[in-house]
Image (cartoon, rainbow, N blue to C red; front, side):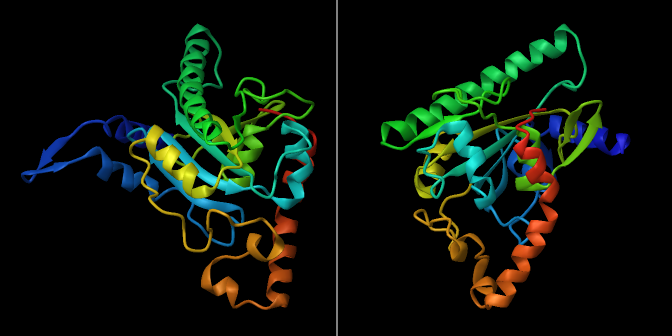
Length: 274
């Protein structure tokens, strides 16, 4: 596992270079596509996924878009307030590759965290301010506290590691009383941070493309239109196959999802952060 992680890290470090092979330039974008194959894709296993993970910043940042799980509505209102339009809420987790393992301690670790926080905050503010200027609510969770960075701070906090587990099924490692995220590409050298908005999906995608030039999702997926709501029939719709499912099929899927997420629900209610 360590050898594989070292190999991945070495390859990702070379993503920014352009080399010649057989007279043809092998660009960073081609390398990034190779590593994206390790990330989750849309499937019934990810019922809240709207846009699957995409690597941006020449492979340094993993970004995806998800809808609010109905069973976690009260949790998000605890964080952002009772007036939050949860039926429109889009959750945008990001995972940034770090130069050092943030599990460690020392001045170099703290300096790395400060640098990563500045990078993320600059991008998050750009996204949120652009959406707010068009009349839409947007905010991001302060990675250091889990509290809203732009809006009023309330009792609830956003747990980054639990969010990664729920939305993307990323693995975690136990380190005493804390859970450490294990990213499928970056390993434990990862910095999670999340944005939130109630803007239409198409507008969010345009804004992300403006902030991240290599963000490649050009149009909304056919079964997740920008104005889609999160009611039962739409929330569990997964392509043409899901449209053909009868009521019994939907109930069976809901039971399966509920059983798989019981541990996550209990953890989310504690509002713990990593």
